[in-house]
Image (cartoon, rainbow, N blue to C red; front, side, top):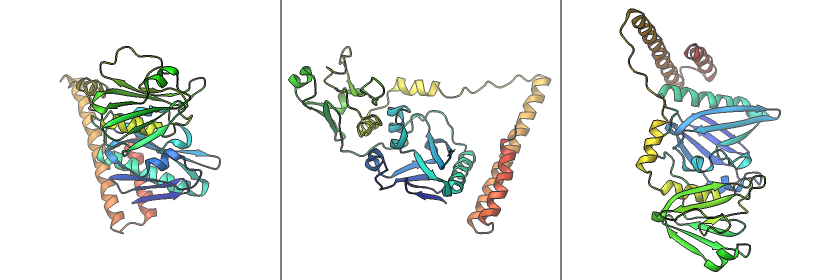
Length: 308
């Protein structure tokens, strides 16, 4: 068990699941507080890193494409303090952060978790009902219907049309972008058979400005809708096509045979290292090895695993 608790929140990893709990202080972004506790399965994780800084650093979790609806819908544009998969680490806790990174990386290696796209969401997305406000309107989603209400700052087209409600079954896709530079940001729902796209200001299925610079809660609404949309067959085919190509079996000539035998020997060596890591973990959990002894032995083995 690897645990790390700081003012920004706490991350706990038991070898199978990373539990993320946001902090409750004023410095913690509203999106992270509204999202609440996250249980991230190891199978959804692509990697984790610690980024050192002058006064400590940041933990950064990376998820596989297609594993988390929030990660997919924000597409890397949810930055700064709003990112639920980023944890600010004070200087005195950097050692614990590096240990957590080491534990996650070790289990990713032991379990041979792929880093390619996931065929289905491995996280459920934000809970419903969920709602958010922007400059020209407010949006709510109850799991079955999306409802849009306009403010006095909406265009005359939206004001004349009045509030909009549509079923999740009518939604083909959802788009989200935060305020950035001259762009006001948007939360747009594309409906099946909706015809050519209109400008965001006149689109009755779009909040067109005032989407907060760091995302606000509109990203949660977008992710909640995306999580509940059916994954289309053509989309799944595209994701599978993006997976690393598996090479054909090599020819059986003498030179190729020697190369194949060398590769097999390399794989067997790595398998032995992985088995040894598992044995060390059992000794550590049973109390035979201290934390320091386990850490030292594991580093030695991992250097062998990473050796070209």
